[in-house]
Length: 494
Ligand code: D3G
Image 1: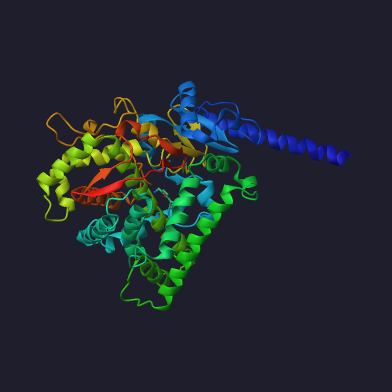
Image 2 (image 1 turned 60 degrees about the vertical axis):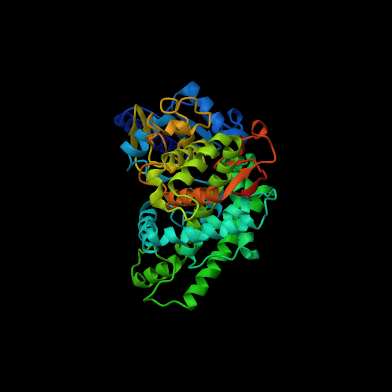
């Protein structure tokens, strides 16, 4: 009895010392966590949030608590950064501290910390460096990939011609074309547009990407530890992600059987060769799991983001026919009808450049960013963020920051032009994020957006079954991603 009493006192004393020490450490670092609504046990701030519109709810909270505040998504403590200043001060001015990766419950179900996108520390660093170098080796940023994109654009034009002006849902036309560019790099070849397996992979990417944007997808971000065991749409998303992993794993096996260490055919081969080189390094990050997951990262991110942007872009252009007309004019004047667009043309096409920027700004592909994490105890403004704190850089709030973009809810390419009609950069244009973990596919994405958009408009007029005033460009879902409403359109040969 006495012994257990003493043990209890000792335990309590220990606990108090630990609490005091952590308070003292916080004081020493100056300040405390950013303010925010009081969380309840387990559900956090669930009662203050609406999973149908997480972005809007968080922005509403920032009106009350300021541009830097704390929110609890279930048991996840997240610091939210709103507006250009807060996001830039964190991701750029304190780049090292904010370079960790936070959670994405849906994708983490599959990736479990492996691969280049959803990983941390030395793993993320090594895989990022390898990915960038290897993409370059396979022509990214050079003529090689430009020619591949031009060729693929040619196949898309033919596919649209074959529709003979019928109204179609452009989703898979665009995703097949976009996906074939990254597929050529990671798998060494494009898929045939009639390939049934290809279409099923594209459905799996679209399905799981859309899920992260839905209300259930955002609810899953809060309560994944319970929901992963329950029936619901999340199980379908898991099936799709698993299907994608299985496909990549089969591709890797095929490559292994036919590998020539002296001449890598694709990203997978290059990774296999690096695995051999490092097989005696006990700390290597170049092993099978990272190979499969990194390849899937590139395949997925390289497909879904650009193709969703183009799909949203066409809807915006049909809503604003005067913008489409000016694009046609610039394309006819600078490129003409008799040769394929090339990336160099961009320098002479400020209007097109402005439209692409406005499509990306308005489209707001990843509104809350891919979540980050501070990798050490961090003093930020007057606050203290303990090591490991998750951070949401609200990219959408930067893309709509009124200090940079007036009437940000309007689609207006003029905002990216000066009074002489020259292209005007904006520091708040951050669809690829900023800082140490910005999107390293940015260069490839920009080249694809320019070449696909100009080649399509060189050959077609866009036609909606609805009059412009009835076209709804508000998103279908906003969660991890922004997803445009489903629609049909026709491509009329010019
Ligand atoms: C999704 C699934 C696997 N790997 C990457 C993604 C993804 C979607 C959007 C982005 O990454 C941002 N680059």
